[in-house]
Picture 1 (cartoon, rainbow, N blue to C red):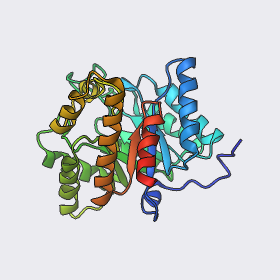
Picture 2: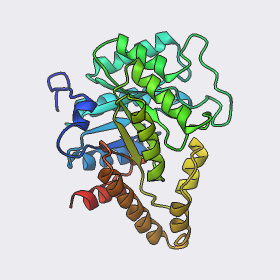
Picture 3: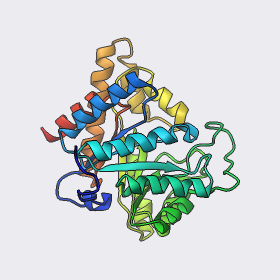
Picture 4: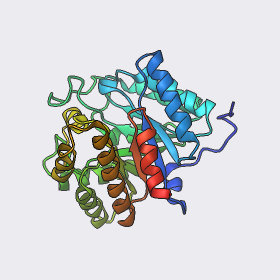
Length: 297
């Protein structure tokens, strides 16, 4: 079993600046033993290609906090992978957030993605901070940076955050996160490459330099995109919807077209200078690994 305390803990910005393309994969905590078996099969498959890092999410409303800490710690200790933990403000006091960061530190984890998180009542409900907690992601970035030698990342929203007035406002929020100490950002799922490029260029025009990694997810089943947008309020690129709709009655064709679209987006993003690619696996790594093979041969 690898000793997490004995091996180096590279920072994600360093990994993003490495000569080879930085590929990363996102998992979420399993709900039961059967789901955990699927998760670990996916993690082991991903481990074979030696990605730059992997991450583990929080559930909606911070509901999977304990499982997130446990799974992230187990990956750090039982695999050769570099791990990034997610942390949200939702439902936690500042004291509790400090304790969770301490748990990550104790597990040897030094890369954290700091998120405000969705409202506890779900998308569309008002955001209400914990009475003894934090209100914005930049505050969480500052808290984590105060607690030790952590590399902190944040979320970015090329299609505009549901609560934001404009993409320009989102760019300013991202700049404030960088000013608070964030050293990289990962976007929500990109379905429109042009939207990613607009956000990147707005941030660059401010004079603030922060690598923005696009998040990608190959569609493998009809309705998957719609479910994702219901969860995060993200608009979908019309071209992507049309291509999936055209084959919606053929399950294998939906999967094939979804992988093709994701590959095309990945190729264009890399050609446009994206600092890496972050694959959302939904805990089933087969499709994302197929996209990876399409990119690297």
